[in-house]
Length: 438
Image (cartoon, rainbow, N blue to C red; front, side):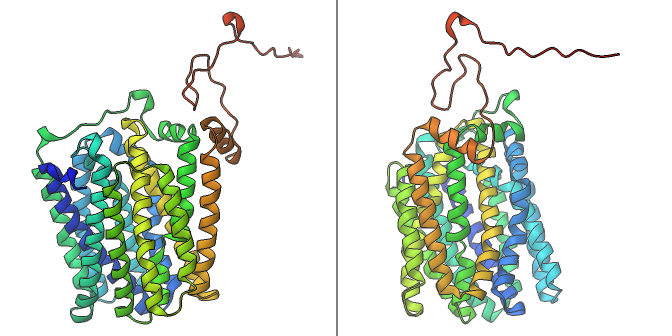
């Protein structure tokens, strides 16, 4: 279960991740409650999520291409330093009670920096463990992230009440220093380098062509979008189900406990398959719908535990399959596109769920969202049961793209070469001659 921890580099990297995640969640809880306290609107909390995730939607593929081409250490150090400055600026803005526009602008700037350090961190993090331990490392990373979430959320509720929200942002600024220290002290000779992209496969367009040619990837990203937009924006629905900052903190802590259990469950498995992802997504969808029907805050909190555990298993499985089932030179771009899909899901789902909570009520919104994610999961399971060729054809029809004609011998989505025509010659299309008049 803990085999990835045998490496010194991963232990150092994991500790830095724990510190950084703890600080990030302290800031997130502080930011969400500042917005809720000043505006009194769950939709405004959704808007805060939107401005923080919109840069990832627009610039994610470019950030992934950058991570696949330049040394990621430089990108990581530069981005972490910028995060320090932005966290301090956010603390001062809240302390001086600057207008909400300033807070939203700083949130958008932090989201912009996160666009570029996300793929770089993922690509570098996968080099601190051997390939066979990557799934275990990702699962343990989820456990550490969940532990950091618990520490960050629980301490944020106390510190915000005693010292104020600006202190949370200052602590987050200090936490980014841990990542810089870990990166600079990791032993370079013990890393497991990834293969780079050939020149003809470098860049954003090549990455998008790679994704567009795989029905499996397109379906995974589409399912991830639905699950994230309607089934993963619990920071909005929990805020709507809470009547105070302490209640929101308790629900957030309960959710984080569930994510720890999910990370441990994922790390205990030898393989994380797409079938596991589909089963867990279906169960989680049913539980989400049930969470809107159970009476009382205690019942809602109890159902949150398996929902959170399922969310971690889904995310870990998705990340593992994207990184191990595709070319190493595409890893940064695939991670970036996955982050962009998640950001787009947050940008769409958070305001939508906030609006539905205000119009229909939070319980009714949970039932509706859970039903829709269950339908999407069942549809994805049916498509995944088809052959790879059928999946690709269906994806191209949905995207309204014409299928490309491959030259003889070029590999098809199923992995088989395209057969040549009898006689070894291809048929040439005869165009009618057009007479040009003077």
